[in-house]
Image (cartoon, rainbow, N blue to C red; front, top):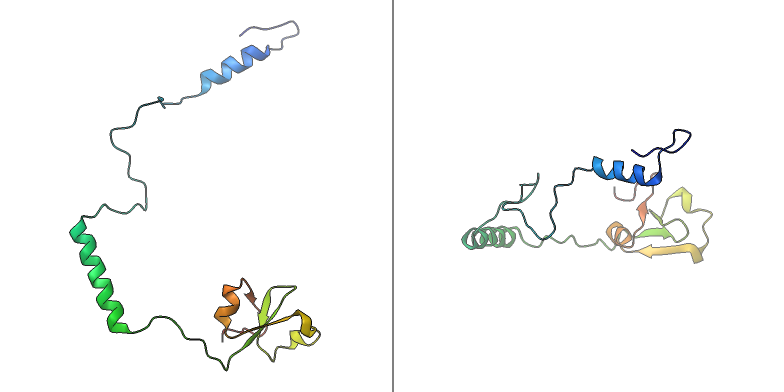
Length: 126
């Protein structure tokens, strides 16, 4: 290293020392022969395997009927626009909330879709 008076290295000496410490193996323009398997990666399947999996899924979904939960219209939920928390209609935390701040949802899932979180006191999912 090139030192100056007082025992301090120059900026160029610091940069050269830092560059020498890097151990990059990357060469621009080349690609590795085989990429390493990453944990959690999916195995490569053939078209026949994919078609079989799709057929199995279609059969399972047809046998089970509709998988979409229908909202129960008799279970409305009330959300508070200022806090983005939704409650049961009889929740004690809604007592001081003006009507202008209340948002009516047809189901708890409708409130979740609107990015509201459930009240920890009244537990509107139960």
